[in-house]
Amino acid sequence: MIARRLGAAAILALLAGCVTHETGPSSGIATASPGYKPNVKTDEAGIWLTADKAEAELRDSANRVRDPAINALVSDMVCTLAAEYCGDLRPYVVRLPHFNATASPNGSISIWSGLLIRARTESELAAVIGHEITHYARRHSLARIRNMRENTDLAAVLSLLGATTGVAQVAELPHLMAVGNIQAFSRDNERESDEDGFNRLVKAGYEPSAAADVWKRILDLRKAKHEFEYESYEDRTVRLFVASHPPTEEREKSLRELAEKAAKPTKPPPDRLREALTAVRLDFLLDEVKLGQFRESKALFELLLKDDPLPGQIYYALGELYRKRAKDDDELVAMSYFHQACEAAGAPPEAFRMVGTIRWRRGETEQAKEYFRRYLNAAPNAGDRALITHYLGS
Image (tube, rainbow, N blue to C red; front, top):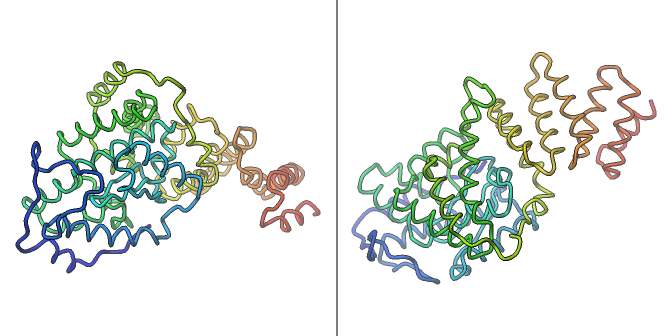
């Protein structure tokens, strides 16, 4: 996880002392114009400088996803949704297995991998991105930071400055949750972002109902403890997002009503998300497994299975979830999921290898060899081909 800390002394210097504020009508802060840069004598310029330093760290971070397909898609979506702000925004895909996206005051936007595996369509992802673009354009983070500086301690401000760039000190989940609570925008800010983000969504030709569908998905995840009867279920991977963007049935209803009034796309909305995720989606799913939150991850995977076009990857992730927990009969349950993965669309080659490995360990040699052969057929250039060939020759 990204864990670099910004220099506290530098940020203190930027925020302390006598500075002036640029203000405008309505909420007190004017909407940014395309190409906007803050006056160097204002506190906003200091905030941008801090954000620029954090963005530089993100640009070189190991957590940054560099796969060309998903980056090309996200860049195209941001530019299309942002319209006049296209040249001001710089999107980054970040490998963090939590449901979140953030827009920095300086124009960097972070799309987290946990969001990418939870979005069912490109339109749903566009709804979240459009919402974040509005936070940027309306300078909501600046308003929030100023309010925090006047009403709370500096430590909270320091955390927020990192969080808004997507490079918060996220080594530990409790810190993520704290930042989420700090970063919560006002109801007016959220209403603005919902409405303007929705307008951007529709103007770009996406499915109008996607914005409401995103909130329904979040609410479904929060209610999963009842559906799956997990007494202690608590979806911590969603809590960061809901802390700063509180979802309610009323909010979903408002977006649903906007969708009903909006004109449907004249042609089918684009849906390039699944194809763009081809090379990285399984890694993102397995990052969820590595969180070590068995009940939360199982609930998520079972929700995804309801409408996922490539269930083989989900079944494999479920198998890994049980295999890594390694309690009681977990190996048998894991093998069952690996079997289902092998026969489903999108089956990863690793599913065949896992069935073969478990059966070999159980003394079921011939069955194991069958799956080892299927593994090599699916992955002829596998790095462990020599080892698997050795098993087949035994």
